[in-house]
Length: 486
Image (tube, rainbow, N blue to C red; front, side, top):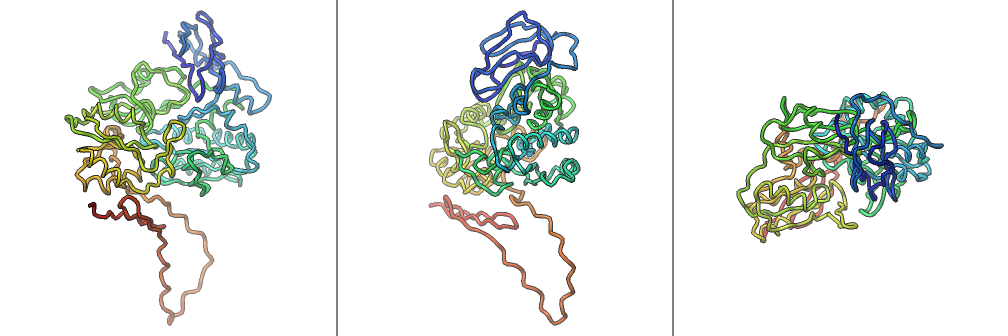
């Protein structure tokens, strides 16, 4: 029999308080812990016997035979059902969904984050391919709860198959639409979704409600539909396992994994680790952290990544550029230590604002330049730098760091190299997607004596920051010109 370890903190807020004791028999879906304040109910993900209750977890010795059914939740309204289900944001944030949706948008927007923001993760796309109809019904339930007139699914344009499936699923409903996103990180960040879809840049302290919107993860939407239609509690999670695995580095997607399953169990289901490895990451390449085989998954877990061994910097003096989009300083120091680098300088991304002890990007995915930070690293005596920046910030770092003799490493390098993808350095994708041309009425051919129509003027903006002239061309790629350093 396997042991299921269900953590008491799987959400923003305080840990839940157990309502079961060691020796109790529980069924799949039995309520086992309630929030003491801000939080969400926790249910047994398996049937079995409670083996232990600690300050941090409830351990359940699972029965050999597991039923398909579950203990149903109860609620008078759809919002009450979401609260009873213990639903939280399943994209990683873990904010209690019933609290988030308890808002009157007065005809505003539900923005569904289907960007699958982190590189190499694939479980959101698998969900769309297999459960598009229920996902769309979930959007409609949430629109009704929040009094929203518009539902918009934000998804990267590169996912052509999934976009086609969604278009078919929403066909005929003029309240639902799809907004295509460029293939850049961090296009799934909450404020980036609002900016891209609604054209409103929120301050780092503002919530999407300031733009008459709620942003919600695509898996959370599916689980909302399950809670409302099936009265099913939030007891499973969709997971991507990828990396240095026997059989190859391709992604393995496991749907409806019981919460409390260990990282090691899922890696074994994916084939097992292939020889020597660098680390195991719980989460994505940017925002995930190193973990162990016995760590249990939670309602917010998205990825498990086994990486190749780290590059050895042989004690070189290293600078860390900490970005709101990537790992925090502790995570960056962890990576530096595993690369055998000596950290002598730490800089924060120019756009990273500290809000309540955490970094928030002032304009996610749009970088004004990092040249001054690179100069600071050089002055501090750094030989190499490790950065955790978004696609655009990384591009601006590359505009100056190599010229200063600084070798650049990105915190995602060991992940992307493991799965055979190009590492992040220069921006190779346009930040602006080409709009589909509108259908125009047929026009007569121009008269022979008329000259060819003049080409429209190129629209652009130019800014100067930190010794960098940036020219943003509305229909084309940005141009970065670095001034000589003195």
